[in-house]
Image 1 (cartoon, rainbow, N blue to C red):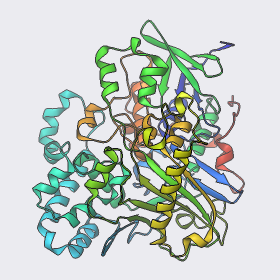
Image 2 (tube, rainbow, N blue to C red):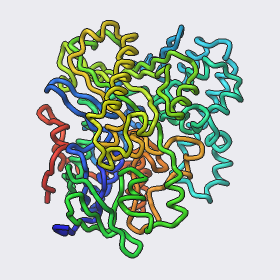
Image 3 (cartoon, one colour):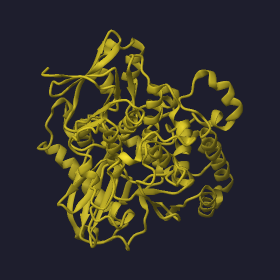
Image 4 (cartoon, rainbow, N blue to C red):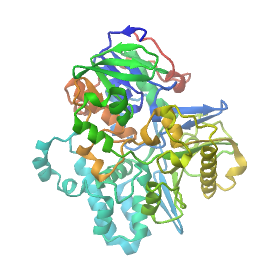
Length: 556
């Protein structure tokens, strides 16, 4: 241990959107807040990377919902002084998602009513079941919107009266609802096709999760932030630094220090001790409890729960730079390409450690969603991402311990062979949507669950945190406040769940626990904590990627 640093009110470990939102709300409420990030750029799964000084690729911001003027994400940003700082570009309202199955293409439109009409048009034999299914999903989503998170046991009697559909159906599986509605396989597949957004099949996915997900997009359409995904973390970094805080990259945390049942600070991987009475972990849940803190500081029940938790399935991603311009060639939509209607079987293959023969292929093009930002891809070129779900575990990749334990993998022949096989399969799948794609590839790379673990230390290489399942949802997930005094949690594995909207809401919830106030309610009522006049982000010469790197001194 080389030096000891003091005078911070709070330390946030990890700069994902949950951690940055927590830090922004703490900083704008007067707490000197320090964010420590292992990577060289802030943002976690919301960061971007650049190649050839020509292409920019999103790691996780592929599309957003609830981004209208009074939407959840803009409201959270407004609370820290960022109103109007980020422009959200709407995707095709007639089909922000395009679901492609053998013999059937279904465009998911903006609006519950249009969605319902289109489902009945496509599947008239399932009309009765579709109406019943959507009545339940829409009812669960509407009633959940009235629920204050997290839910306390004493709230249950009131909720039984005020939210009967939510209480009856919310924590049951989506497959149970499909069965109750007597839906055929095509209807089930189309209704569950976007389950890749939370990586769980109908047999495991809570109805509440699916209802909230589709409501998130249907009620106001799909959006993409102008300037690329990095603008979201960059503006929050600006808020933190402009309000007396600091964001440090290349500053990984080795240990969260606990003494006599309370946190006292952290020790970085470089051996620096930094003191603070509050520590928020936006890092991987299992590594936080079992490695950065240690089992001895928690109750046996807590450790048993943490060890029992299952992580969500990970993703395999291919990033392509093309010397062809897709802006006027394909619609502004995400393509979900399935070669089977058996979505449940696809997941089962992954759970059993097999790469599915019938892969899901998700294709999204940032340069189409944001056609004017040439940092993403210059005119005449395109930047696209292709994704699929894959099994967790090291064996499939020819590894034993994983990169978090120091295992090298780049020269591993089995690893490279599996990576190449999947890359080729996804590009073949994308050719169905973009004929001639292969002839125009000028940049190609892929990211595996092993890559994800290397960069984020996430258990199982997942970007979704704990698996979204009926036995791991709602009150079964950890709340922001822990049993250790001064230790709090943010990120995808908390009760607020994953996704940009989920972790940002969780960041507000975490800051609320720390400050002892309901910040979400205050912001909905019009409170603004941040001072917009202090902010420096935005403008034609501002580069969000550069603004998210390095260390900037805090302003007095």
